[in-house]
Amino acid sequence: MYKLLFHKEAKRELSRLPKHIQKIIKDKLFILSQNPEILKNNIKTLKGKYKGLKRLRVGNYRIIFEEKEKELVILIIRIAHRGEVY
Image (cartoon, rainbow, N blue to C red):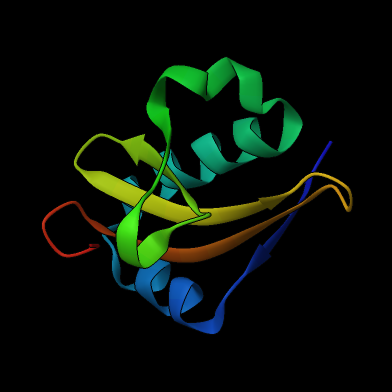
């Protein structure tokens, strides 16, 4: 089980989303913290500016995160609409 940590900006972005979208994203993050293998089809390793980070696709929204396997921590960096996140 991974521990979820949120960057200050990611918390703010999540709080600005509509409540029903927040619930969907929180549910996916809970699944991600329990067993990332379940969501492996929606997780992609990023390149370029975000090299070394991963993204989780949740509908039209993207969650940019860093997975630290040795520490069992997932650091959530950004949560935004797919057209604004990159």
